[in-house]
Length: 460
Image (cartoon, rainbow, N blue to C red; front, side):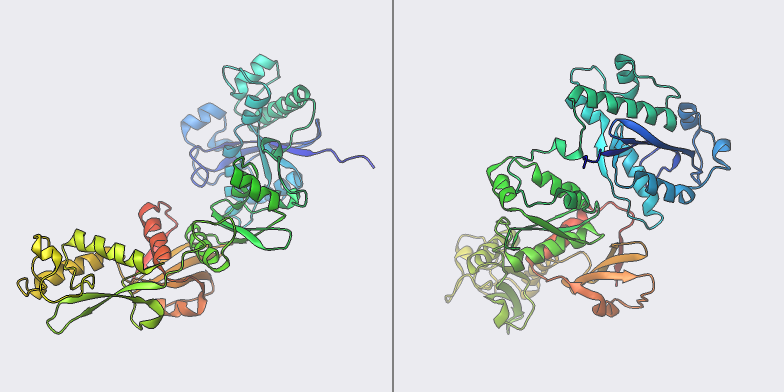
């Protein structure tokens, strides 16, 4: 039986401009290749359901009048799925075209997922030395026919001819994994399964031959991140590739949920190759209370033996002492009241003018406690009670991360049918999330860098 030739869907899209999610597709062309032969094609204008700016019309020749009666994307979506099924998505500057196509499908609630190859990147690798790798310049230098420049049909056809030329130069067909250094990959690993991994936020698990989890990771694009591991060349990466026989995953929809899930799973499973996070358990805490004179005091104790919520938790008593010492210095606190000295009379810092005299009664409790409260406020979130809502795992769903009294209560997902009138009702939807120093820092960092308009924060 003859080996089946690889299939390539060579695609070009014209758009209203901007980036995927903002701009929309105005024209799409697909040339389906089996090996080096073009066996089918589909070309259509698309009504973007929005305005095409004049400068875009001047570039592409596609006007608002031309697309007024054209099918909307949902009307051609089935055809796009069918013609590109079981093929590699190929485009010149593929990240641009692929992102627009994926976004159009996301708007329909469909997860469009294909292997991707970029002829810009392939051309640089197979035919190095050109001054420019723009489609027009390459076609001119390689004498590839290019008609209807900046129209989807003309550009896609020229890209298909360019791909054929690259096959001829290389002397073989080109596959997406050709860019990977597959040296050292375990023979039991199913590359077809790898190529079917989702391109969405989630966590992934690497398994060895005994089905033991040897590594846990997270990414905004699971497939892309896993493939990057397979191209690893360092000693640790090569060792992991040798042991890797299978990959499983969980889609989270939200990058923040993926970060929290990864943290929880690494601490629970302690995978061999997760050196940084596998040994972290926060068994020691710093607790606060007021003494009979009204001064705030601190106590370092085991988390499980104290019924109160710690201000912060640590993996060892030494780490707790070290951090508490830093707080004493930063906020000019008393070492004796912070439990770092156990003696009668003033603390050592008082003798070197680094304590204002809370231990001797010279500094009133209200002044001292203000600095302690500032320290506590700096440890906490800007608001003690809030819920972060983000994208879900599928259309009609949203994720949530719930913080109450500066403690992570958990995360989960809500469907459109789930009616929540108060955050306390989220309790029944929580599926994970362990409060500790790491997870609180994950949430803090996420809040600082978040930029997506889809992320909503409800304070209460």
